[in-house]
Length: 271
Image (cartoon, rainbow, N blue to C red; front, side, top):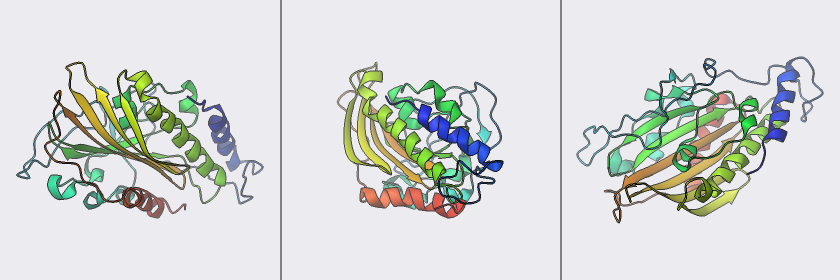
């Protein structure tokens, strides 16, 4: 897995831009380069992504544990409601009737994990905290034995004021990509298929075996937007030889990635 040292150095440089402008690659006014989108987390706290599930075949809510969620609480997210994906643009919405993610969004702090990191038991670089100060996440619902959906957003600052912020987002995306591609090393027996891979996004399908003989099936979408990194994960835990209750169906990958990126771009006005 690549080191985040260079990314951390860029972030440290950005912190100083409020006083010095020499670090700004775009040559613009270097002041006030970072946005604060959530309250500062308690040091060393790892929080859950939330697991309130909804959207059975009858449309009635059904409680189901969110696979891979870390233990603990979480503060309410201060990411603008408009930054989250429109649930109608999430795959399988017609069948599962996803809820708006902003309704239950949580701020997990620097120790928060993307859903794919949780599912793959990813090994994160120790200097991650030098780059990412907060991760916000939300459950869109789902049901036991069927697909569940989670979205996460990491805001690294205002890319409209410094191109280095966008470069940092690319660096963090690269590090998370490495965790996805290395899933078999951290979750033995996992199978990873990279569907789409570009400097601005990753689309992958992952199968992670479970101790009971079943597996978690995953459709993973990751993309950058200005100074933000956005994740959408659809995952289903099924018994050995089983399949999710709802057959997989999705629009073109480009449509899903656009539905993730555009709201963040609009809400943060930085791309």
